[in-house]
Image 1: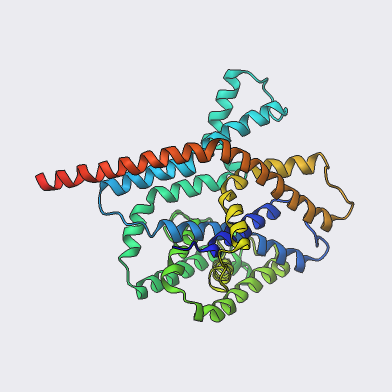
Image 2: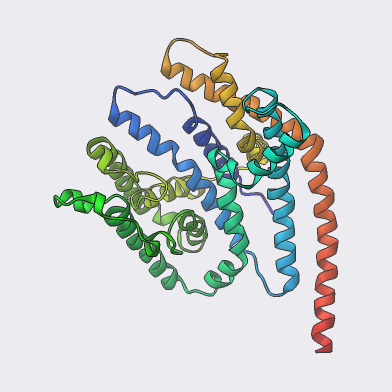
Length: 370
């Protein structure tokens, strides 16, 4: 079966969005409209990755204990293992470069490594990992739920997601409605009923990936683009002209939840990426996208702080530093993946396949006995 290179291209584009979003010098600082347009576009990278994760993970079928074991074990091999190893490397790097107050001793390192791994990484680009791992833990149950729903029920669920998001964002978190009505938004405190609900945060983007797979067809693209552009303009104009009154402009904002699915749909359904030379290059880059994500933050900081690229023009610096960050991160990723992660993951995945077959045989035998 021919690999769908559109998703590979989406991974590469999403990775570039993330790298440039994390850039330290942004152009158009004196032109708020253009600046916010750029930031809204680049912030779509996170949503694209969550949608792709939901699109593929929520299609898994879970019919017995072996399916759960195999799913969790595979995610531990492909997601958790690289994250843990690289977190240990990053802790060592921060110690070696003098970014920690304590001297580099084994006890200090082990303590910092534990703290970084468990919660301090959330202050860096690795916040993504905590959210992703949390969602993957409940993925088997979400998959069974949403696979059982009919299309009209999925559409109803999407509508509820957006409506709940509008209430929790504009009424509670932003207090925008109260501001417009002349009230005191400081008197409003976000309640747990708004913040701790299944229809909020990144799980929306994760679910939207599966919904897109089930509901979107190529002939619907023009309507999706129209709605997405309304969301994009709402975000840009809201942040430009309402300023501090439009706080939650990205990630969970209602308009944003219809914008980044538009970007996703354009790359998936807009045109067909063939498995030719270009497609294979895109596939090669996409294969290393996860490791690029893990390492790019420190590469970007190093290039910027040491002024390795400084043309004196902010816009040009922005482009060149982003490109250099991607290139260097790709080089590091290739070395790490080819020498360590791919060989280890390959052996563990082969073992897992054999083990999964054994698990299924054991389950079948138990069912026959019972």
